[in-house]
Image 1: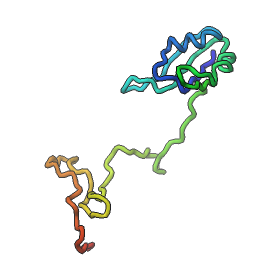
Image 2 (image 1 turned 90 degrees about the horizontal axis):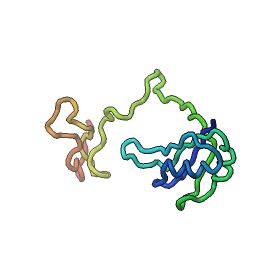
Image 3 (image 1 turned 90 degrees about the vertical axis):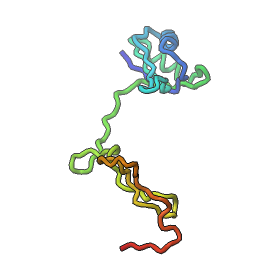
Length: 142
């Protein structure tokens, strides 16, 4: 059984339409349009499984225009193992935790100490930043 990648499909294309398109070249075991988990909308690519006729289907359909889009068709491969990103101590870097303070304000207007505030029981609404800082005044860095 061959797994076929079908890219650049129309967002409206259905699994039934894929089965019909590839069925001209052999029996289609399955057709699956990949969809976004949250919106349910097609991501613009699909996978088709065929017992026989996969090579002929790939050759014939790759580069053809369907519903105004030029299809990219190739034999699908297992996803490659991605290199893990860590900090050198085996800890994965995370990007959803506290990020520390920003400068606050806009551009070179100064601004307060940034930060996100309100996380450690501080519910007073002060989320860091500040008005416009020391704009036009001497700054004291001590």
